[in-house]
Amino acid sequence: MSTGLFDFNGTLPVMGLQVVLLSWLLEQILYSPIQGVIQKRQNKIQQELQLAADQLQKAQQLTQEYQTQLQKAREKARERIRQVQQEAQTMMEDQLKQAQQQMTQLFNEAMQQLEQQKQQALMNLSNQVDEVAKFILSKLMKQ
Image 1 (cartoon, rainbow, N blue to C red):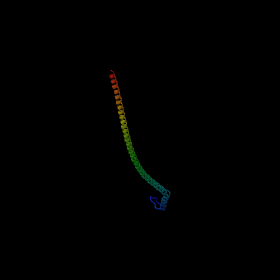
Image 2 (image 1 turned 60 degrees about the horizontal axis):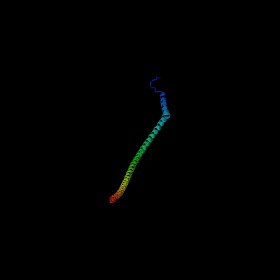
Image 3 (image 1 turned 90 degrees about the vertical axis):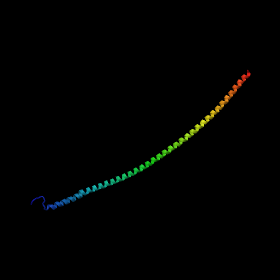
Image 4 (image 1 turned 60 degrees about the vertical axis):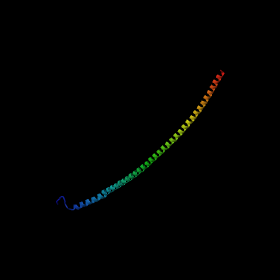
């Protein structure tokens, strides 16, 4: 018997059977469970990616809604500020008109008082002139 590199004797089918049996055992014991774990992991990763994508889309929608609400709130605040400024302007104009009316009234009252004082001073002066004239006349008459 010669032992060459490839001897085709009774051990070849046994070795072939061993390879097939070992392949089947490895498939059952090692490869199938590992493939199951890998498949589960891929499914879980895919689910988490889908969940993350859904959450990202929801976050973008919420961001858009918040931006819209913020814009509306800013516009409402601007409108309210404009109204308050307009009300303040109107109030200031009303107060200015009232102050002008009061000043005009005070001025008119002061002018009336001055006119009365002038008339009274003229009457007093006239009375004093009359008295002085009477005094002078009485002095002249005595002489």
